[in-house]
Length: 353
Image (cartoon, rainbow, N blue to C red):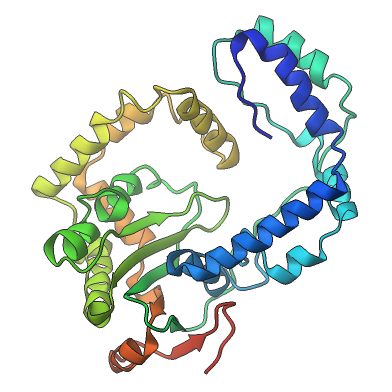
């Protein structure tokens, strides 16, 4: 649950939050409405190539049985099967104070906060939720190229992704400027190549997921249809480059480090930013002093450290590809690349041929 309230109205706002969190009624009419909205959301995701790729990719990387192997919004069939009793049971199982963490950011002191919390949540019955275990993904089979047909689409959405390493690596901080320089800003390597230099794309992105357990490295590039194969070659070249063939050194290193350090002063300038940092510490298991040392540690990063991080997190030989577009125009060229087995999927990620 998340609450935003003025400092003056903190106590009554907490009371409302506690009522919703501890004694939800799950009205049947509102439950039915939310199910309808979720099914409509799934339909919208399937209609948009970028969001369709985001739905399909987890199952291809992690496997359908993994906790991260399903789309976050679910499937039409799974949503249809949920009952109001399922919600009540889920709440009774997982909403436990022994497993809860409270993050508060704003103009409030502990002396004011604790009495308000005790008044709002003091009657919360003791208990602990079951432990969650995020296992590693199963050993992957040889990576493939997956195609999904979007007849008459003016663009192809290209995704190159791989499973990477969980948080807790010595190179966790060093990979941040690497990822930012590769695909996290308008002047990133990927965007400079496909948008600014070649004008094949309106915009690209690349990032490491922020999750517990095994993370994913995902590159996404929507490009004009007639440049699909050429763009795939460029994405592959850029992935190989960031992994080690083109180290981040010299003027490029100095530029990205200026970008990283210039943002440090304002990084925690909003309540949302402070809250996000605290939540990341809890959810990702970061050291308690991670943020207090963050600025100094970022400024101390060397090109060698960035190179070591890139080589450890990015593995070009493990990349899985997804291309969503007009297969009448792009499939033959993709197969001719000879990069591995090509599989055509439907919009639910099931093989067609």
